[in-house]
Image (cartoon, rainbow, N blue to C red):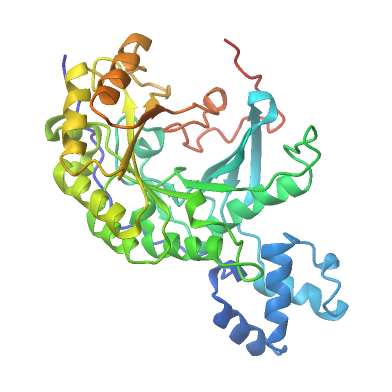
Length: 392
């Protein structure tokens, strides 16, 4: 077996400087909103009213803000809720249960988000950067390079848009006679979330702050994925927002992980797994180890054994869970997903050594909306295209 070639792209931790998006209501905390409202010549209590419309009522049409004077509604909307995400196209699959949206930002950058309905939850997969600077060679986003960081509000707006789609009847749960809500948010779209730490931590606060000042989500329903920026993992553990940490490991040994996840040359396997263990110890939240299975590259039985050894060495108190992900195809890639028998053997080896493991249900593969496929690179696709769900 020949290891994959090292990515020719450099690691980029500092995003290029580009014009900032306009400040949005979701960029501000409650105290800042009251101050901004007074600075605009209005009573401070109007801030709570506006928050109730945005976060709780999901109302973006000022004509529906009936508790506010008609004369000020348009002004408040233009001042505090400037458009941040312009829809370019929307694709669906899985019988309409998966919706991928392509957005254009104020400076022309493109990002994608994915809304997914499951029997017991609705999950929003959001982007935190336009592109990605981590240069993982099997990931379409990473191979596109980093364009810029997203703002807190640009991240939050992806979730709010998903919530609005549900409230307006998209993915409506007609059989159950109820409208589902976004119950889970995963920072697994475009970008390395912890490389845009300030905006991402701000978004986490907006998502978890109770209504009407935030979306009122449970931190337990939010997952932040990272390739392993160790200092930021330690910082996230101190935020007081016990989200689930997902560590994209993909190899249990430094030689192979240096190739698959180039940031490993900065923080190696032992360092990132130690940081994940510390996160679990501090937050009392089980860490997810993400492991993409690539045929004949990282799916050998001995690597399953080595992975189990690496994780069990930190203890067996339920701090970790392995999430195996079949490799999703990307344009030009010479790699493919593991054979089913190799996947099954990998699972068996981990289970035999007491390591909890599941294989991820791949959603959105047909519309390039699955893990590693988001690239926002096909803006010419007709927005009306509907891709049928694959059967069998």
